[in-house]
Length: 459
Ligand SMILES: [Zn+2]
Image 1: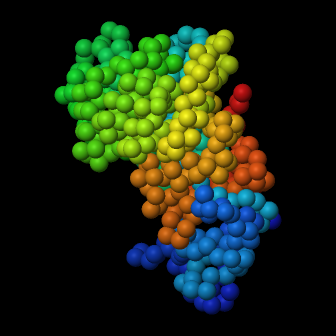
Image 2: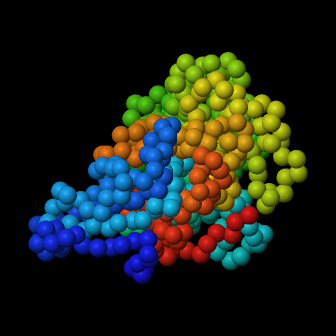
Image 3: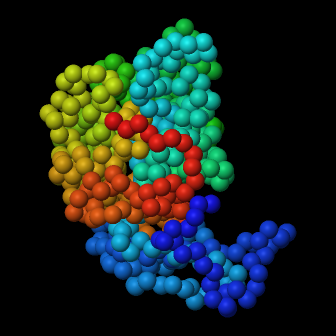
């Protein structure tokens, strides 16, 4: 454990609380309660509601028990043996932990030129892992980097059938520091479609198709969803149109009955369904099928906006995905032209659609997700709404509003802090200084509390 800094005063409470030994570790004994009093100079407890100054967030173990005016230094009703920690963020802006609804944790673009080596299984494009084991190691590193950037909850919308499940489980079991992750597993795709990752010479192999969630026709697509569910998926992702990343065009690739099969099967087993969709036809097919979110939606038209508004469908804009990283060396990217031509984000925002923050991190460097905030605000969203999209709205989309998204008594203690005021300068969210997830401090004074990996090479 690193030396205590001035901003942390780890102290045991007064005589009353010290009256009994903690009794940690004895058989049948529960560990002592751990209280943290976070002194917030400015506290945005509920994005959308004006922030307050000089507040204390009272945390017992993993949850918030109260939000109090002024700086508390003791907890009156703490059980004997409880441990109390005061965290001084009186010169910081404190807000709920951020959430990204669209990441791919098993990869990011590789920065070195690819060279075949012994033991190299020729990944399909630089950065994509050749095996589930490599994907899991990547996901460990990238999950942590997202957490360091202030993202305490992530939704992984398509890696493979192994990597991110393993990392989610290790984090949930407390074996390593990391964000809460909702996992889609393999994205459901049709043969030859965007996201079909079966190898060219083995597309007829049933098991290869299943682990890659490649399906054709309603029956196969039901099975593909059920297989990801069996693996432990938290959400189902399907790629209903081509995409910039696969050179398969931008038009529909699934028939309406295939889309209906995917969405209905996901809902049947209690999962939400997310549609990667560019073409307005595919967007409308997905909305008719009751999909929960449209991912990207770059070619969204007015009819689609009206349908999404009526159905309450979320848009996850992934503006960052329109700007390919320099590594791809694409001059005049068509993604940028389409974005500027259709202005889907601006029109969706003006129409009052539900917008959930999502970036497509993994198609660019993990940990730089906050650039999306600057894009959103640059295209006309208020900073408050941008923060709301990454907290209140993502929590609603994920179905975890009772647990996260705001700082209120009873919710998980997920919070971050920055110097400066993001409501005045949204760019400060790119420099998250303090991160707490479920009551545990992961980052303090700009440094992760436990070393794990080298810093990222950022663009
Ligand atoms: Zn994506």
